[in-house]
Length: 231
Image (tube, rainbow, N blue to C red; front, side, top):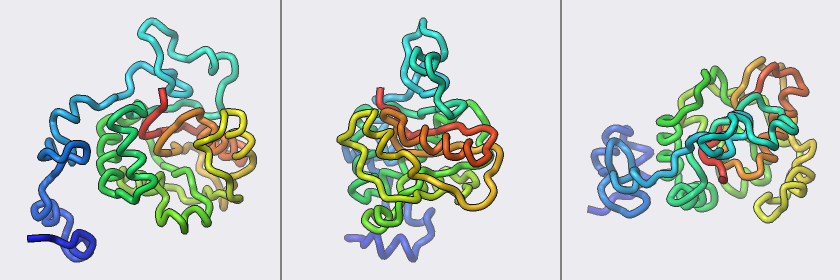
């Protein structure tokens, strides 16, 4: 029997839906494993983040210091950064499907993986990196906000993107920083401690601009949690 997923999802409780639609690996289409839409073999190949810089989550050799050379030379505005995974196969393909192809099942899986590799600190409040309203209308959802919702941790909604910016993907690190300068602002009082959430961290320009904005308007400590870090 062919099931109309979109119609069924709105009318059938989630637990029953999982019975009607058995777990299926989103990478190879084999049966899912351990409550995930990921088979045991693909799960074993996941690029979990290992030893990394405390401040920017850049992967480090086992014998390196806990802070990379760049962060020792110029500390970023966030107190710490944690990446659950590295932006390598199959995580990179899952994130592209989630971010650009409306594959919300991939987003749910990525959030579940983030829950299995959380930061080593307590997250009292999450704040998703916001999209500009124009981009939000085009995409239909904010991928960072959806991750926050799926993580089931309280979210602070006071951060917004005050101006539309060009896509970051084809820009150098310096161009990314210039593109995002003064792009964010807040509404209302800022909580003292926040964890910024985003899907992917490449150069760090986006999360650093967010962290700098939050600290400028009164946050005592800002930390960052991303699904994946580009090595």
